[in-house]
Length: 258
Length: 253
Image 1 (tube, rainbow over the protein chains, first blue to last red):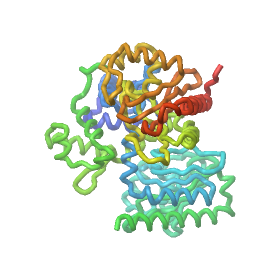
Image 2 (image 1 turned 60 degrees about the vertical axis):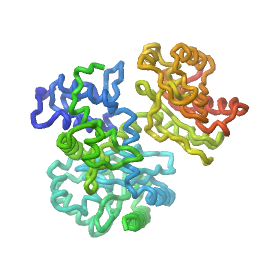
Image 3 (image 1 turned 180 degrees about the horizontal axis):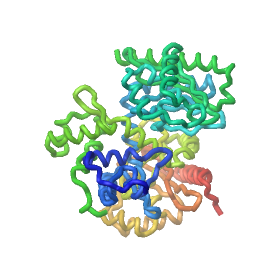
């Protein structure tokens, strides 16, 4: 442990319980008590009381042999309730399916959560080489086309907040300079789409376009696939298809809201 | 579970999350306070923290579930490999038997449906992904229990056996006998145990180690799923269970 576990006085127990839940990610779906205490910078005994309470509330389960914790599958119903209220769904899924059919690539609709972009819906590509992605998966906003395509249209303070959290390098192609990042976002606004060429993963390219609701960009639609398949030549066609899908979804959401 | 180490205020705060359902997806502070018998000021404070961590979002003067619950449910779906592997098999099972199919796992004394594929026939049954049902009243639950170590079964039955449908098994000895028969047969049939007029048939899903980790089941109204058809249903459900097990690396010797 690099830092001594200290009882973080600035957070209430409730807040810490929620921070604890937010530690679990697709990359790290299971955590043990020391990892939890370490990440939250709380005492081991505090972590123990929090996990017990979360177990009791049915939000975590404990693996008896390895003594690790993971989110309980009863949370699936909450995820479904969350998605249902997005009225985007009934109209946008058929459009997403059509996009996958035409491009042959996995298609997503995403929204922002702080400096992360979260997939709301996904339609799998028809190709045998699948990229692993799930509804609820989080990726950094600065190196994904889906994130950039939303962030580009947000107020300056939100863009600055993302920059202040740090533009971490995921590959050699990740944009890490604030100036270059701001220029990229300006370019996205000018073009109306974003392309991430291996900025998050080697060998993966994605293309995204903004979804508008009541005049504001609230989400993005994107496709992602192996860079070898999304060649320069093909990219132009794909960009057009992504933009068309985004416009269709924007129109349908505006209709719903009207 | 060590009840003395449960934090009451946190527990109250988490109970707020459990209020949100498909039927009632938005709640006001006063409604929450009434439903949980808590002070309005306490609820306001808890709600504020839930909003700060993305578990609730404000919608007008009321609240709804926030993006953090989707992220967590994404962790669950991806973690459960079975969710991925089971999808295709479940669809082909539904196409064959023309009834609704589920994959369920055991969590404490309940089963949770991880995945559901609906059939095109009328009569929609009351289940959805993430729904919990008592393990002892469902064919999936009984299949899962039949293959658990004794201490798991004991801990489930120690809190009593709930009566959900006219045929629910409420006697412990009867349940033990039932589980033994399920182990011998390799499947479970429930008639009117969870709801009246509902039949369900389940088979085990094993992982590479041979452990039963999930159950695949079909469910439908008893007027359609009648006894002469049972052998056919059983054959298809057991086959689906084997199919998913093989995808998870199980080798049937």
